Amino acid sequence: MQIRWSIFPKFYQHLGLAELAALVREVGLDTTNLVIRDGYWVSRAGLARDLPLFMAAMRDAGLEVRFATAGFTPEELFADETPLALLAENGITEYRMSYFSEENNDPRASFAAARQKLERLAPLCEKHRIRCVYQIHHGTLIPSASAAYLLVQGLPAQWIGVELDPGNQSFEGYENWGRSARLLGEYLVAVGIKDSALVRDPAKANEPGKGWTRSWVPLDEGVTNWYDVARALKSINFSGTFVYMPFYDEKDPSQMTQKLKREVAYLRSIIKEVEAEE
Image (cartoon, rainbow, N blue to C red):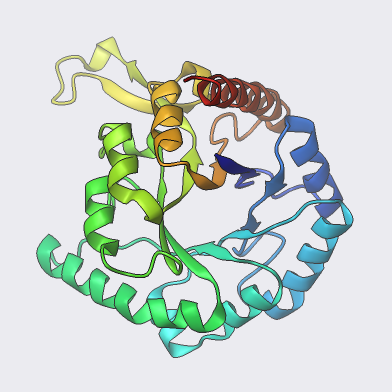
């Protein structure tokens, strides 16, 4: 497998660029996502100004940034292709797009509309030589690998890809990881790396949900079998990006960093062990 180990630094926005690069090294990752979001290093309104500065700072620190968490909707890009052009010109080769939602209580019509948008988006991505990546996510129209495959089937995998997200899917769309990987095949180009745990409040045992909720935890504490995930990825000779998403201890960056370092080592060990298997 060829894996680029990256972070989505959602809760590290207080860091300067040099500090962000140092964090990547400290926790044992290869690089960071480019986050395009107001309040972060690169804002939507300041894309043309901020993007070259961010990329130059990461290059100076020895980090190669190729993957962006951008959230652009197809409609935005149909109206103005400039963001795609800017990303490509600055060395970004893949970007995570916005999520599709169920509209008007009609999942069939919503799915058909989403598919049509991707069909229109693929030629734009080809034009600018950048791949659009759809992240499977609970609470959206596409919460599972099966739904994602139906969404992208037949579209050019060079320009349209899928990001599995085991921790996210544990909320709603968990499917057998081996089957998911084989189903998505060439479309599977990224994996969201986070996990969840079930927690029960006995005081709410008589409520409809019986007191069960999920919370974000490091990989070695969560419900996902990461050996199964690793073997699934190995079965298709996965080549792509791991996107670490430390969503725990967001109010305590020091504690979050220590746990992140631990879970990076945990998954690296699993990948090494699985790759050595016959």
